[in-house]
Length: 307
Image 1 (cartoon, rainbow, N blue to C red):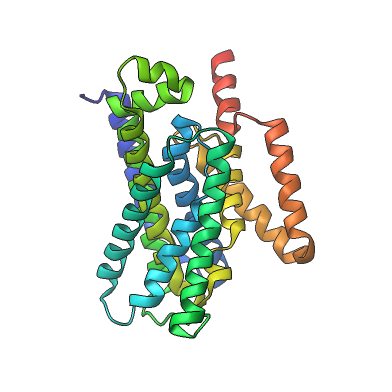
Image 2 (cartoon, rainbow, N blue to C red):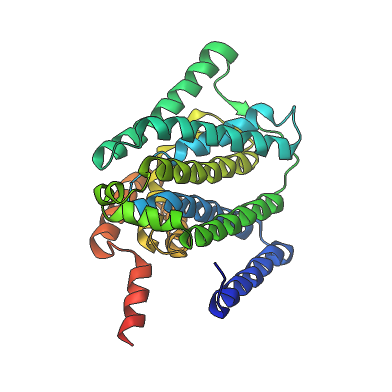
C-alpha cells in the first residue's frame, strides 16, 4: 500500500525527532538527567510493546516482567562469554520462543482468565529462575560486567523505541492490523468472518514479547547486580500497564503520552515516599481508570473533532 504525502511527512518528521534525541546525550552534563531519560525510554519501549498486542486485541497482560526479567538474566549469564550483539540475539530468540509456547497454549483464554494467567506466568518465571539459582548455581544473584556505558544504553533503547513504533505503524496498515482490531471489537465475529484469531494473536504476542525481552537485556548492565527480585519485580508490569492505559493503548503514540509524565511522577514518589510507593501506585492506577478510561490520546482526538 502506497503512503500518501501526510504519511511520508510523518515518517520524515519521526526520523528527525529520533536523530535529535540521538545526539541529546552528547550535550547533557548531568548523569542524573541521562539516567532519568533512560527510564523514560525503557518504559516507553515496554508500554509501546505492550500496546502492540494489547492495544488492538484488548487483552490485558501482566506478563511484561516475565519477558523483561528473562532478557536481564540472559545478559547476566552470557555477557562474559558472548559478544554483546550475540547476547541480544539470544535474548530475542528466548523471548520469542517463550511467547510462542505460552501463546499457543493460553491465548484461547480471554478476559479475567488471561489476566490471571499472565500474572501467574510472571511469578512462575521468577520462581523457576530462583529455584535454578539456589539449587543449581548455588548463587541467588549475579554481577553484570559489560563495557556498556549509560549513553550506549540510551541509544539502544532509542533504537528499540523507533523500531517498535515503526512496526506498530506498519501493522496498523496491514490486514493483520485490521484482523486484530476486529478481534478486539468482537472475537466471535472475527472467527465467523474467517480470521485465524489464534495465529494473529500469537504472532503479535511474540513480537511484543521480543521487544520486552531485548529491553531487559539492554537494561541489565545498568544495575551491575541483579537477582530475581530485581529482574522480575511485579511493579514493572503494573507500571507498564498504567502508562499504556493513561496514554491510550489504541493510539500509536498513546503509550508515550503515558510513559513520560508517569516516569517523572513515579521518580518523585519513590524518592519522597519510598515506604508508601505501592499504595500511591495503586491510587494512581485507580484515578487513571476512573478519570481517563480511554487515555489521554482519546482526549486529544476529541478536542480535534470538536474544532
